[in-house]
Image (cartoon, rainbow, N blue to C red; front, side, top):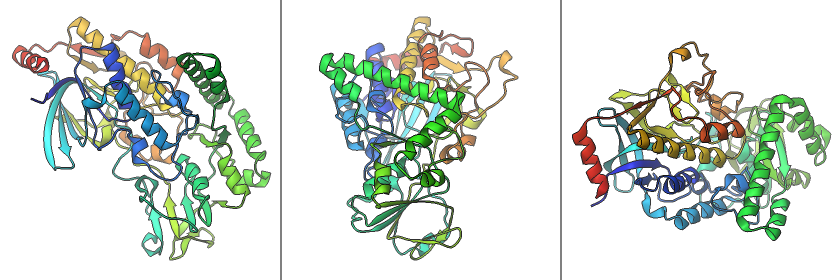
Length: 502
């Protein structure tokens, strides 16, 4: 008979979910778990997005797992290679059999009486519904809606005679050879798409409302290649991972402490590849680096496409769509056969699932973030959200480690419920945005849906890897803000133990 109660349920079989399962297997080997994946495949983001040139914008030595060395030739890897890496990790670690595919989590309800989460699931292939339960939830479902990406309500979109495509919904087999393409946006997706489309299109025009900071780096990591020649694989990988992690931290620290120096450096690098007038107009933002995410381009591919004439950049606002293409403010029309709206994502909480605690619906905007991984008043629920200023997996690993520390602490103390709870001394906390000093559109549109950040520990959502390592690995679990409760309703607990033992 299929088990329907687990110690831990992990939601999401992407990069974070597979990593969380590996940590759980290694550090809490006696615990039962299942991974619920709403789609039919492993990989999450790296399986969903299939647009031309899809790749990481972080190096794979830090985006990859600590337990599995990245063996690919490219440090900046394509989406298919990353997806294969995650699938391989799940297979090698024996995690794949514990994944329940086509299991979309719709509602989560906590019972303090019984000390369990009830997880209501819809199965998209059959339309059936089912319920599982667990003691602790590890939400690794990402931060954006899998249903559709964000496209502004541009005037006249229905008038356009060509195709309008969002990268999240890329048509399989789309032939754009010899086509005139306009890409709206200049974030990471656009920076990836544009030079790749230019290889086959007649011409590609990237339209941006305002410039984005761009940095080029080699597609391969020369240091990693050298270390592999002289050191065992794991040692070479660990050293490269450390080098790149420190590099990320140094650049971000500089962006906060000496923003003008970093601005000047990025402008100087761009001027080595492009005319200074073009850099001034199209690649010198008004905001400081890392107020929005810094876009990475490998081996100057975007700059090279601009220089060879296959790509143009336009900095202007859009008046409306026309039959022929886009009309810009001022009346200029950009003709297009295809218009791609690389305009961002729709952010959601917990994969879009609704949440209730003891029958009361939770509005996350009314909660306070606990260490950036739990919510005040919400027991036994941990959310994985990586860094905005470094590789996602660095923080996902720390959260998975902390989760295992929490589980072992509760077992040792004989408690069943851990609830972040504001202390008397927290009553005067000043509320801030869940992610401070980060203002891209996809975040500012939805900050009001997220928990508040406080002005003191542990109510801070840190974006500092060095600080997080100390807090996640060394700081006491029982810190006075995490309230522990023992569930005493023995008949139900005994039934759960019986089911778990089957």
